[in-house]
Amino acid sequence: MVIQKEKMNKKRSFLRTAAAYPHMVWSALFIVAPLIFVLYYALTTEDANGNFQFSWSNITALAGENYLPVFFRSICFAIVATAICLLLAYPLAYFLSKCKVSSQRMLIMLVMLPMWMNLLIRTYSWMNILETNGLINNLLTTLGLPNAKLLGNGAAVVLGMVYNFLPYMIMPIYTVMSKIDPRYLEAAADLGCNGRQTMLRVVFPLSVSGIISGITMVFVPSVSTFYISQKMGNGRFEMIGDTIERQFMSNYDYHMGATLSLVLMVLIIICLAVMNRFGEEDGGVLV
Image (cartoon, rainbow, N blue to C red; front, side):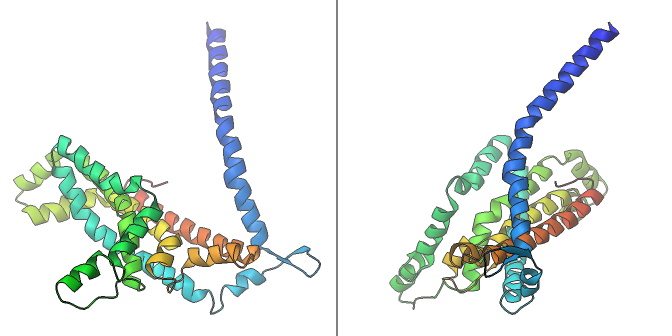
């Protein structure tokens, strides 16, 4: 009987290992290998004979005036967009968590509905709304008001980020809030807490893990975005993603493009590590 159980356990262990092989091969081909190539190109330069040699020149070049403003601008725009998403998403997520279950399903579908469309289509839609002959300016003209310059500025870029990434902030906060035990709220009311005190002392502390997850899910794509800044900012606000695309697609400078990609990955990893640290203190881990 014992021998039979051992055989069954070995068979199950073998099946589990075999089932993991496709994932391991996929990860090696499409995750590990590209990272190795990025690291290789970032730490090498090409001489006149076309030979690659190890060099730190690509990394040291990032400290120049051509790249530091880009990093600073990308981080600032990402922070602003993340903060606005949090301010909009938190009350909306709380409202969704308090609705009936049937209503929640419909409202969540409406929140996620724009995500079913391609990001390019969503961005072009906003361009048509904000452009000189767009919906808003046509309305202003009808009212006898002068046209407003709504595209080609930082506010338009942030608006594009907020619109595209807002659902990523709403969903984790809503998920956490919907799981809060109603008995906590009843206990707070029995102890004399009013609505504001209940929100600050009960709901907010219990939803911190969702807030941290939402901040991570919005900040990471915001700091690395490139298409939104090109179209909504009319190319006037170059960000890290724009610079990386230009290095690869226009300048064909794979070494500098890989170096920028490597630094961006390091920034994202640091962000995730910091958020995970806060998540662990709050009782949860993000990744």
